[in-house]
Image 1 (cartoon, rainbow, N blue to C red):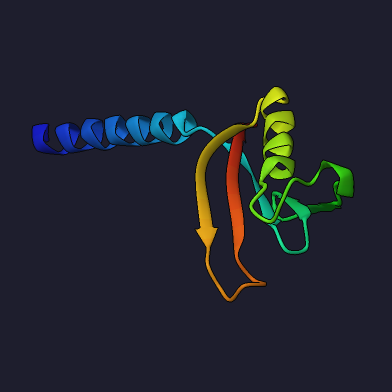
Image 2 (cartoon, one colour; image 1 turned 120 degrees about the vertical axis):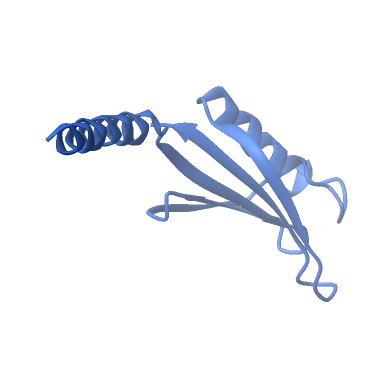
Length: 107
């Protein structure tokens, strides 16, 4: 009988620890900002639901390597509690390379 009681109490304890661990996981929203210097469009995708394209004014563009329009959007989102947690750079042919900025914020 003692063995059964110990097993039962151990099972209850493990279930409680698991439940606490599941609740402790932080939930995040994710966003990706993509910038292609050739098209000069900043594309923002949020949670796989919201999508927008930002076309910066031509007078703001300084050259083919100017990433400032994307960084401006990263800074705007940072002001709205988004955290930049990774970046990426894709190299294709001369017309396809792009920059990516990965952001998240707690729900």
